[in-house]
Image (cartoon, rainbow, N blue to C red):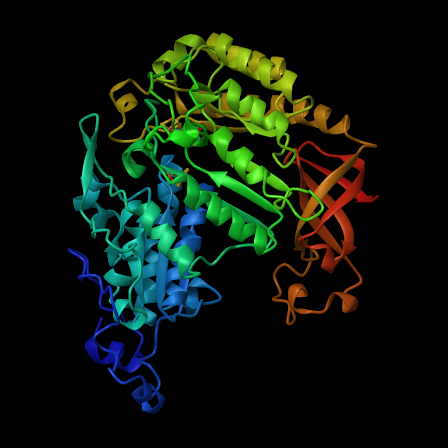
Length: 553
Ligand code: SAH
Ligand code: SF4
Ligand code: F3S
């Protein structure tokens, strides 16, 4: 990069890869003391146009909403695509090697964008940024200027030198900057700054969350993971479990209800372990859920997910309907699927009839090696209980095939489990060794061709099982929350000069829409564009293996 070019461009950023600048907690010093002077100031120096590339799970999407909100709050505009941005934020996923390769493989293209736009700065954050790997990051991601661990994301604005433009951001009053704070998970150092909850509260107070949708919102309730799955990188990327304070979550939900959100999804790596790390309080005296598997915990007097669901469900409109008609939560771990949670799901009309409960394998020996600490018997007992309490509930799961030492018979046990349970949806992947995880010490001995074959076999089985379940829904009327307008095929490669969303619905006539049922099944329908964001009844007339089609009832 040459200095004159970046000056000419006027949008280049000083990148502080190291200790952050001190946080500005009052009016920024760069602003004039007399506010009237503002009137005569020339235009503010050009701010970067930013683009965020988000990979991975819903938690990353939620984190990106927060980063986008902070950047917007600092006065930056959003670029339409990466190519026209002066600041690219890559929010990475590290769950499998393939997810990391997607970003590593784009380094050349990013370097070319930098050559064409010397003012371009690239920030890489998310789960690929782990404290012990810092030294290697520059080598793996040569186009990147600044690396932030997930818990450092609230410092984005400060580290880019944009804080003086925006004023106080990030941390709540009284909390100390915590870049560099780490903790130990086993013997591994991880980022564990616990100011994420405070910084979310500050972002909410300043309306600095740029939500993806005006209909459906993510609401993080617990950060990190305390579980012991030997294959998984998440505890090393995201640190230990840290629950957001109960009242802050309720306030956020109330704000979402007031803003007209139709659906809220509570987020966490394990939402159902919510609250165990919060202080006990008299008002939660009656709460004492017991874990029957996994590490023991003293949960007496602490809020739990059931309490959260009940409190959000109890927000009602004047006519007594839930103010947020649809409440969801992901992901649940079998350790914490308590009877209290099952009862809350059954009692709360807003809680959708869907549970994502990852099983990972159908064989107890493999589960033990995976560190999951439950047996198939326990898992099935929990499922039977929830199915009895919430008849017709849709169940989805995650499965890993080809984990260390998995025999053909053990794999077959997973297929038999899929048949026995009748999942509505299965997210399956071949095992991918994650450096630094306990399983990295085990032999990754299932040959890649066998992993691929097992994965294909499992997906084919689930396709037919899912198809059967969907066929059984033909003729039924299901409630759909309409989310998107699908652009007509054939025009995919030509940019629409006037995107459908920008036109008044009256000019559009009938368009192809998609939405989700309460069971979380994708539903296609035709209707007018102004149905987006609305809950409608749809009569199902066609089933596919992964989705349904119907017409307005
Ligand atoms: N916290 C959630 C899942 C988070 S990761 C839970 O416990 O269920 C999402 C899924 O990715 C996991 O459920 C698992 O199926 C898969 N996964 C995690 N690590 C993996 C690895 N090393 N190789 C392949 N799949 C993996
Ligand atoms: Fe990973 Fe297991 Fe934690 Fe899920 S529960 S994030 S699979 S360690
Ligand atoms: Fe990926 Fe991190 Fe989510 S590893 S799945 S982005 S928690």
